Length: 364
Ligand SMILES: [Fe+2]
Image (cartoon, rainbow, N blue to C red; front, side, top):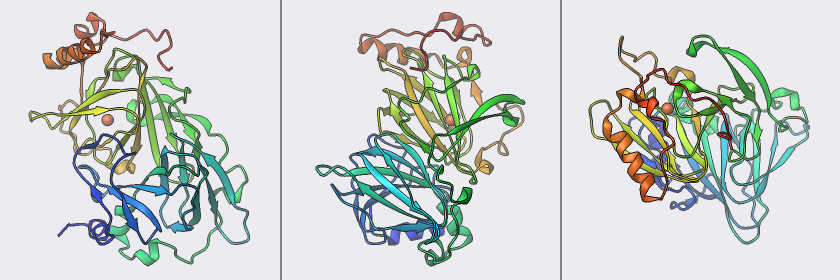
């Protein structure tokens, strides 16, 4: 018998639960009919998720609409395939907020609000990945009747503003975790297409010509970031806490994950692949495509960042000169098999302080 209330609840739902380290394509996994939501669905519970975050794939039938549903916790939704619209409303006398989405849109469903999804295409289903902190909510309040379709009514956060799903706004903040460095945070409830999002910040400390965007949903603890890194490069290995679900908006490559000193797991990825680095496992991302690789990481609450488990003196990032030799060799042979060459300069492997000069179109 599973340990957490959320594990037991998932097993009672009678829909598939996909486990393991990764899913190569969320667009094609098996789903099953789920009476609670009135649609086909499956849970994603990869290592590093149980008890912390819920992943769920839901499908809207061709030309169909799913019944309205209300959750007591905020949710990120990432569109895997299809085109449609979503309406969200708080109290009965408030206006509905409706918006249209398409593949790779990212949006927020606010807690205590009704949401209804419609598929605008009549010839194919639409699939969405939902991500929330539901396991934590269920540990604290193990009553589905409280968490789902609760008659409690609340105005939408932001006071029911018609701007609720308008374009994200950027703010600059001091980032404590990175030694007070300034970073730009994008606050918003709707991001139209993560494969073409180009408002990125140079982030040289993580290697390659890496650029990132940090995202936060106003009035919630929901947060995410997306990293973009150019053709022929790979990022530095690093590790942190559990619960960060990675989904790929574009590009192709692989990632390696491993607990220190133990066997490594290799994860091939392309659009709609999904994986979660288990707690404190090192992981490292490699671009094998002809365009930039990009991954979107949906974050658990900040208390799972993994800094508390940090052992004094232990490294949480592996600089290129300290890598095992086969990391580079494997990357170069995988590129060669595709007729491509590494864009990693030799100096990156000898100078631990090597920094790319951010030129060219790395963010494209
Ligand atoms: Fe990571």
